[in-house]
Image 1 (spheres, rainbow over the protein chains, first blue to last red):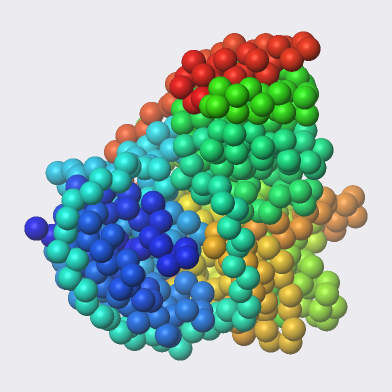
Image 2 (spheres, rainbow over the protein chains, first blue to last red):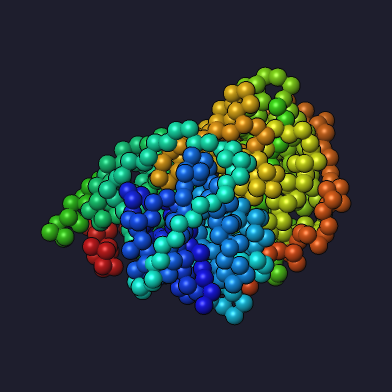
Length: 320
Length: 262
């Protein structure tokens, strides 16, 4: 059976994230998963194996971690060459870094590239991907026709399923060119953990926009009552009320949760692009003409500053 | 410093965007404009030039059909010094790999460049991979997804707000940089800028000018193929209630409970 390389996303607190487990689950549809970890892999080998990794390649990252993206692309490119023509696909997480690695890898290996897949299935002529495009207005099915299919996959594209793989660990030391070492990371401030679910992985997302007036406490309290992640519109981020990492929309995160609650968000196309494929959409907005109401399964025309605290209290009561 | 800004002419996101029968984006039947995310790239290029205050020049480069010249004109009106438009029927339907090839060859032909500035992604394909591909092809460092930009001699430095950390990243020119919509509001063309743009040099290049064969680009040379496109059915508007004395919160929680979210 041919192999599938899976790039393991950057570990947070030394742990493997849910998107990586989704990638391994998808990889098993296409072949035998080989997990590629940059840095120390001993702490994560077992979980990778339990989701199907037959091999775990631990890449020595001493030449990699001080630099941006390019050395990782070179290391993966070496692994692709080593694997030979039998490689079924390379799967990467669809973040900023994953997509850039994928782009460079495509050029280096002469392979076709598909980004932001929301589903990948085995097909007669190689993996068939599904993408959601034009702000969620269209669904596109595509496949790679040259080289090794390189596919970046969005979070929440599969339900992780366990299946024990051998998990044989191999150390790999990549050759990193001088050119790839050109972009130097001179300072790094890790993001503070919020204790809430990751925005792109959460089953419920509660977002706030201009209508919060800069006070996100009510949005956050409602999110916490539902066990939800907190998001923000671009207007709220541009106003400096929330960090960019919380932005939902075309230039922020794309989310596709079971439930999306938009509070004080008008629903411009830029925002809709990031949440339109959510299963259930709810909005609270003072303006009954707000375009967000065209999308909702349920909407409340009202002031979020009174609606949300009351709703938070009632959810807490129901949950006991 | 010689700065090249890459801009794309895209279908208006607020218009009814659609696909052609061959699975490519309809770029003719839908009104187009300078991709909003590329305006930030133009802005940062102009700011670098202004801060240096020397004889630095900003060249705006676009690859695309005839109408793409509008995106170049808008950039010239904002303040770029000259324009290059690569237009060739054979380019239609090119994937990101081929597009990055055409841009790389055009940048080489512009010559003596120090800095290539791109937006973070287009607003149509929105893959966000071309800046990295371009750096790979040109063999230079890439500073991607910058939310602020600083130039100090030969060194360019950006702040990059990643998912797990905020980083400061720097590299020595020549290099490729991409900037996000957090990098600073783009300026509007002034009346003076609009008048001045009419006299600015604008060159049109074909694939032959770049030494690229038509078999290297276009839909038939794409390394991936669209098998099908399907319009998602529009969402049907659900119930909307008006809050009166707390009725809104009660109805909201009742709805969430009916869907088993509570």
